[in-house]
View 1 (cartoon, helix red, strand yellow):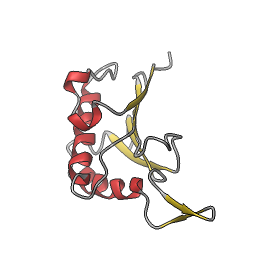
View 2: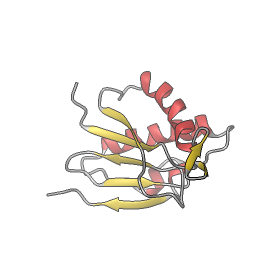
View 3: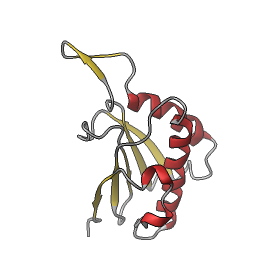
View 4: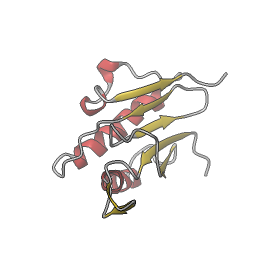
Length: 130
């Protein structure tokens, strides 16, 4: 199966560290769980690879996710709501935003059309390689 789009999820975001070692489950890992569950039944699951990554260098603005595809802008989002009550809503909003991204030929995500949790925490919009 060839995925044309990728949703990257930082698994080290919002980690607790002690003596140079990570303790317990990170916020990124907690976000990944509901994303994986929703991704299984998502209509675009065959179009998007859900890719955990160890670090996206957004440590001061966790949790971070990124949307990328050939010939499209790449987006990096951070500061996503991570409390236990909002995790499922955050995961659903990420997939809603990914659906919008999929529908845009250039990948541009107008602010007004983005789900609420992804309106504020944009860290980068990188132009496509040409």
